[in-house]
Image (tube, rainbow, N blue to C red; front, side, top):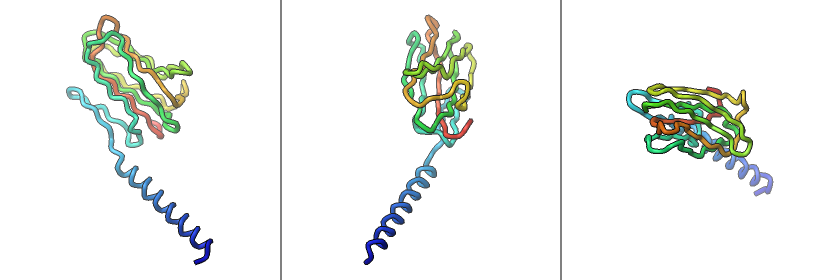
Length: 152
């Protein structure tokens, strides 16, 4: 068999396998949902598995969690629900650039949805710290942070 024909067959087979793999990954992508009482937070079908779902138990002062934004997924959505008796503030800050993506207060018994579609400020990829500032109020509720290739 001609060496060029063998190479064409190998390249064609590899391309088909790549297309099948991508198609399968997209087909199996499931919406991520979190339920708290009667409210459901849903993420876009374009979201990554790199989602932060955080239940605040009301047992820590100013708790923190790590979060990471993947290259190519600069659209970020934050849902925060406060089930406690005191308001809290949530901050999502890039670790090395010190860029604050979200900084919002959530009143007691309230829900906040914030979206940053890679603007004002831009959303760099990399490591972030999510901090809930509630002080002695001991924050209680739920936080859902998702990222997407497509704007929300």
